[in-house]
Length: 100
Image 1 (cartoon, rainbow, N blue to C red):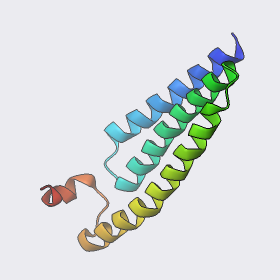
Image 2: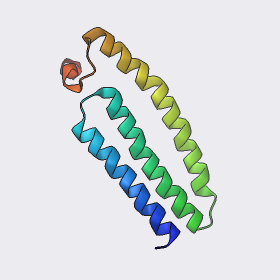
Image 3: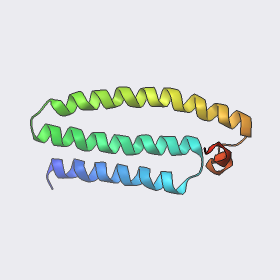
Image 4: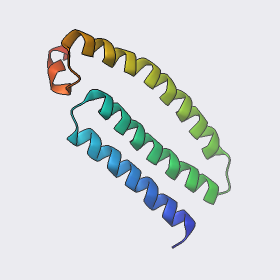
């Protein structure tokens, strides 16, 4: 098996594992971590395909995705923790009253 194929299989496995975690788990922090795992799978596939095409565009795009992901986590985790402090739980089903 070629190293490119191996990396693409690994990125697919990371994405599938993250998707399974988002679907199965109800803890909001675990769901955020699983979403980050899905994002890392997509980034790995992007870097692999960019390296195969010998292009630096993929690396620049990955850097931008990392910056946006860091900002998202910096905003999402405090919001989740404030909601958990209010409801005394991290269960996603406890926050159904926030739907608009």
